[in-house]
Image 1 (cartoon, rainbow, N blue to C red):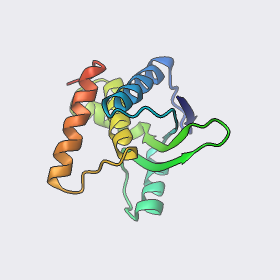
Image 2 (cartoon, rainbow, N blue to C red; image 1 turned 45 degrees about the vertical axis):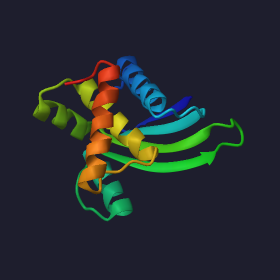
Image 3 (cartoon, one colour; image 1 turned 90 degrees about the vertical axis):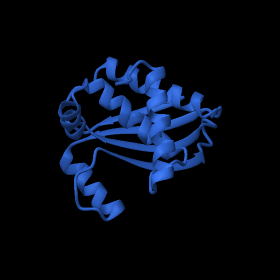
Amino acid sequence: MTIFYDNRTSCEIGDDIKSIIKKVIDETLKFEDYTENVEISLSFVTNDEIKMLNKQYREIDKITDVLSFPLGDENPETNEIMLGDIVISLDRAEEQANEYGHEFKREIGFLTVHSMLHLLGYDHENKEDEEVMFAKQEDILGRVGLNR
């Protein structure tokens, strides 16, 4: 597995956060019985940038916490499946961690698993799909020690 990190904020992303992200990605793939070798791009951005991306790609003119851009193509150089791009607003992640009363690393883990499930084809457009996806999120977070 290859994870490309792009930090476009002034915040430092330490090895502890990268370790959580890798564990969550590994566990999500394992949980979903996804055995292909994957490549994932993960960008950390500000609220201003994620708002602009949300408007550009989803036509929603507001800040969001995470965006997912599924790909699914094979990289001919590495034979890895380019699963897609994950964009996380570090500003919003910090705000939500404070709002929900949990650690920042738990919020980053949550946003990562949420986005990974989107990259694997899940959505939450209706109540049934939301229940399935959210149950998977909590199960995976529990498996990596980030449950509530």
